[in-house]
Image 1 (tube, rainbow, N blue to C red):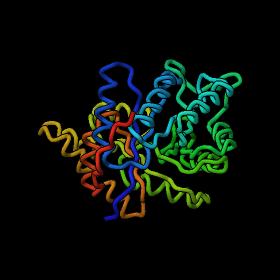
Image 2 (cartoon, helix red, strand yellow; image 1 turned 180 degrees about the vertical axis):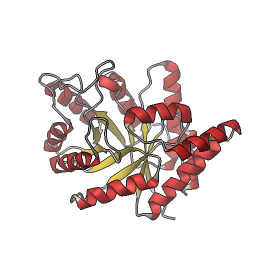
Image 3 (cartoon, rainbow, N blue to C red; image 1 turned 180 degrees about the horizontal axis):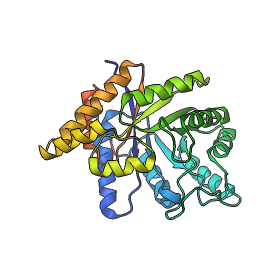
Image 4 (tube, rainbow, N blue to C red; image 1 turned 45 degrees about the vertical axis):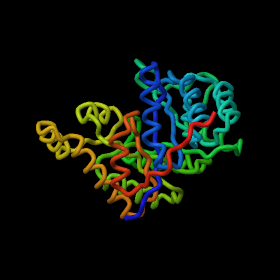
Length: 288
């Protein structure tokens, strides 16, 4: 089995307790030598300042290659590019460029007056600077705002044409979902890396609700498996086994990189990585 390169997504803390949780998560996962770690924006750009602070801290004090999420929501072009300049000033050279979810309570995305209308415009502006590696989102199952998967493939191609370097997919629960999408992208002429996004199931009931909102299909067999595992108090064991099996299949199909959505809960991600043979490196020193 090929040992994959891995990357991890965190979200910024909103409280002191959450800050400790993020720090613990980083300490657990940083020895796995990730290619990069990313820090999310909240819906509607609600954690913009928290994201900036978390990115700067992880980059400077933990020595991690940190990618900042950036969205088109609730900011003009000038405000967005000022944020970009701030990232560059602290040494960040990777950005996850996204359209972003609408603010809570709004049913659909509406461009901010004077702001970027969509992710392609944002990617073009970032690419013109020639300062950043640009990661973008991809959807192996139809995005809630898309008519079908074909529309998602066409839009992804536009993102690459605008200057994206690679794409990270929304999470999914069956290997074939990603493989079908990858084949569709290849037929459309996309030849840049598409990295599967992996979500170990830490809480399957919560995950079902989350998956529905993201357009990720939660198959019936998985529901039945977790219902039984929950009764037997073996949900974590099942989650680790299923996630490891899916990742192993992806690697056997030529996938080289895996991106884990950690939800700032590192144990399942760590266990899956260990099962895949990702070797712990020397623990990173805290540098002032």
